Length: 451
Image (tube, rainbow, N blue to C red; front, side):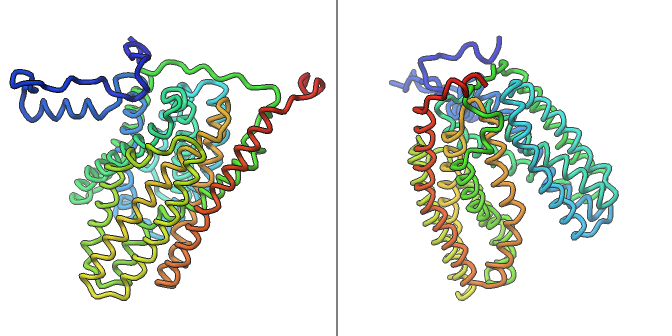
């Protein structure tokens, strides 16, 4: 039986089957803690079907990503003997070049069918990830990094039409759920990689890398449960590369990309800031990362519920900008405070930052899908990914120059920039919506229709 069967069409996508409340002692759930935990998990997960299968593939890949993140760098430096500078430049060069794959693969997925293209991408991901085992030089690392970056960009772009197909008009909810699942997967992968870090031997690191490659094969196998998605017809008035000529969407992509530089705060800027600029104990690094991750898993879906259209997404971008400004000020202030006061303010800043991150994520999900033309969703997703990918590339350097070097004034400048981007977003959203309304009401001339 395919994943399309057995799903009640009367229920909204992703809504679990209703379970009757116990009315008496004889109706109370039976079984031990494991049974009750299983039932609770079933209530949390989407119903059996295409949504659960797609999330399963995402979970498998993110577990592998966490394992690779926790083992590849140490393998290259401690076992192969490459310097940290070589590894850093090799990974950055490959990641920057790999962004170009997104729009092209997304376009192929739109026109050929996203299921098959996404499965092929997963198979390529397995081969590219396993390539880290064979790296012995800077150029080999740059090549493998390029291949893995190509897979990452292609995977996001080819998954987008699948998400639109299985989630329908609940794409923001689904993407928020996917982000929570992804964070759980990454944390689990890093936890598994911790075993390899403690053993610290070449064979263990190689095993971790190959296990990460296998997760792509698992993801591909899960995706075979999905039905073929028929490409949507293309209107004659639309160009082949319509996303590249959609100026309002490109403006939204630039704004979202610029705002995404804040994503390097918890992973890059905060650890260095805590160690070099505050009197907060070093164990606080682990604490703030855990707080950030737990809040994302617990609140991403909840905070996305009010984001139902591009207009509400634009409002959430404003909220995100305000929260990120306040968080930046609190983090920068910790350099001037005594130890335990600084620790409290730091924790408060991380909580405020995470809510800003959650609002930004929910808004970006809706903007990426809500302003895209349905027949070219993969192409639009590839373009949108260019902005986020560029932010990942330049974010650490920008935060180092602005925040780590300049201290509190730099943090305030960063917060002001993020607030400004959030405030301008609703105006660009209105521009995009008006341009789509004008295009929908415009009747093409007969000569144009014949082309």
